[in-house]
Length: 182
Image 1 (tube, one colour):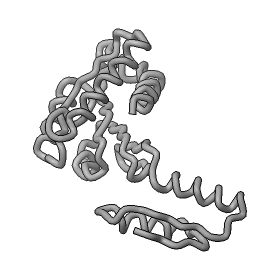
Image 2 (cartoon, rainbow, N blue to C red):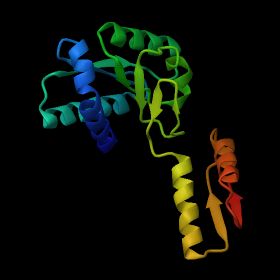
Image 3 (tube, one colour):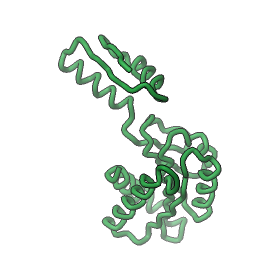
Image 4 (cartoon, helix red, strand yellow):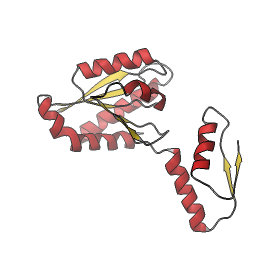
C-alpha cells in the first residue's frame, strides 16, 4: 500500500503540479478520501501516513493534503467529505479505495479521483482506478500457462460476494483446460 501511495504521489506531483499550482496560489491541493473512522480506520490512517512520508521525501512545501473521512459504505459521509475537500480547493482526490463508491463520485465531474481500488482498472468518467486487478493477474497467469505449455489448470477461489465476478472474468479471458473450485 505504501508503494502505491508513493507512486500516486509522484504521478500527481510531476504531471499536475504546474497546472493546478498556478490556479491555487502556487499550492497544489490534493484530497485524500479514506476510511478514517470505523472498522477500516487503520487502512485510512496508513494511507495518510504513507502519503505524508512520500511528501516529506519529495520535500515540496507547495503540496497540501486535505484528508476526508469516507467511512465504510456510508454515502452520506462520503459525499460530505468530498464536498468539504472540494470546498478547500482540491481538484484531485486520491480515493475512494472501494470501487462500490465509484457511482457516488461520478457526479463530481470537475474533480479527478485516483483510486487504488483493484476491482477493475478502467478509466471511466473522472475516476482512474490503478490497483492491480483480477484481469491483470489472470492474464499474467494465462500467459504463463501458455508459455510453459501446461495443459491442465486448477483455479481455486473463495465462495463469497466476489465469486460471480471471478467466474465471469475467467470466462471472459478464455482460459483453456481448467477446472474451477470454490
